[in-house]
Image 1 (tube, rainbow, N blue to C red):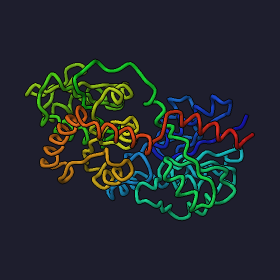
Image 2: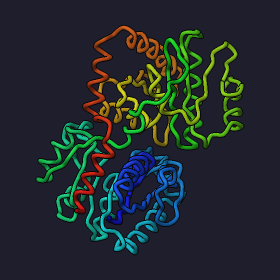
Image 3: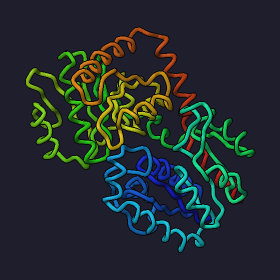
Image 4: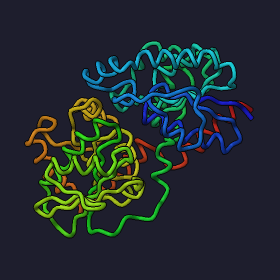
Length: 389
């Protein structure tokens, strides 16, 4: 079997790359990964060896961040780290039979410079943003060359659009990052209705996002019929969570956060999949997690933050990507008006989840249209294997 190198550039891209890499390993290939930014934890979890050292940056990727985020990247030395990773790639690319790009223009350029055969999963781009995808230069020119043996898209609209633009077949086989959440798991304890709270995974933005989510939770009625469940990554440890909660007017008690008016939030660690599947509505301040929620047929309420990633601009772009089952209340990010309006909209959406069959049908349709069916990782791995036979 072949030696393959996965090349990605961000948290969400690493997750997709790790899932695709695991599927390729199961088909007998020897797989390594080179995350251009970040620690590559998704690859480590999947048991995929990393090529060289990694480093974490506060924005978690290269791309859609605020100006403050871009300046932070520069001060943290992200550009120099990226150049270091590219040099490592150029020195070692000859060892691999195929480079599998997961991401956008940066890894596409890096792969092309290696002069090795490549396959590309353009998980970062979609024609749903503007109707016709305008790939940044020189991405389209490079993908049209014979060096790229296959191009895969994240939805069918993009596949049709790019097939015309590149004058070559672009295939949509599903999204590997949907495979874990579409696999049934034991549900969370039963509740009449459940709201899942998703603050994201990137620190220190995670802490600020969580403060805003707690402020929205304060606006929701205390009821035994409504369960509030928080998906929290292990990097925010119990002590740090307790200090944050205390400063926001909540107290930590075991795996719960309790407000003085009686509101309770259940903290769920290592239960992201169950939380998504068990929730009626997700309040999101995250990228990939919101996509996974939509792919499960769940309505999503965005809560824009102050960034560097999940800003009002990012949220607006996400609504164009994911469609009409993603909602956002009016008002400036972090303002009292937006927080109160978000809580009111959440209650309206909960009622619609219960009684509006049109919304339920629309959620199912958009899930298939925007994200595709389960098994995308296996289908893409099989198509890549076919390139090597």
